[in-house]
Image 1 (tube, helix red, strand yellow):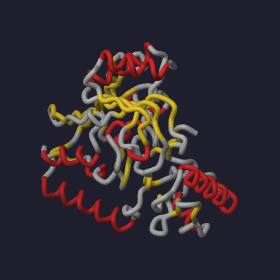
Image 2 (cartoon, rainbow, N blue to C red):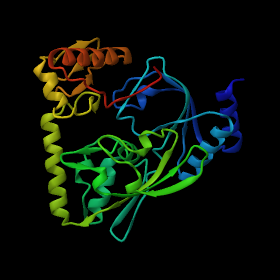
Image 3 (cartoon, rainbow, N blue to C red):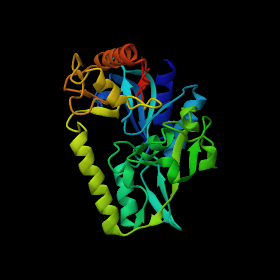
Image 4 (cartoon, one colour):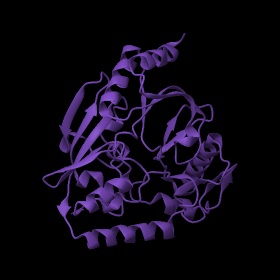
Length: 304
């Protein structure tokens, strides 16, 4: 019996209510709709369960991979031979003195609606980002002039031993698509606190509707993707460089550079991880050769 089999048995014995899946297809858990099976997946429904899983995994010498909505992730066709903890059950919100506190698994669209329902403004920019709050903090997610660094005040997380810690946003090392948590993938974000401002519900709703309309007009939302595949190079825009190189519509197998927005690499229905990785590499090579600019993927890779 190997480590993961032992861990699965221990988790079932100690926490019989915990949702635990073996050989779970990751294509069900990424917005690319790509990925082979995860050997073991735990889906805790509150922070107590999450902490228990992390501590039990540490005892077994297993380092978990933490998953939110899978909106920035490409998983190998062979899958992932490890433990994945999916935090979708951590999705509660509460307000304390205009500071909105939310658990890490809440989808960003729901988070924006929670702020709207409380008459608060400042999170409209996240409404169309297809991720969860935890992932947004890790990547300092942003869109249309807003980013998490503008509203974040504190983060509560589990370290690799299962100890709960809370740190102010100023200690989170937030920069472009990066944070302290990017450097510590074995830390699980449990909750984030955001300082927002009072806003008129009609104005907040109008701003969200406007951003949604702009996304629908400019982005290929009809196809599975991970959003913008590449980070913004200093002094450039990745989509403009890719378009400049005439790469719109370029395909490798079922993966394609979107004909609508060159920054999006999409799954046209049957793409494999190998297809998408091949397309990413091809785009990087062509852009570097023709413009001298090296593109860096924003997408994370698992199981390769």
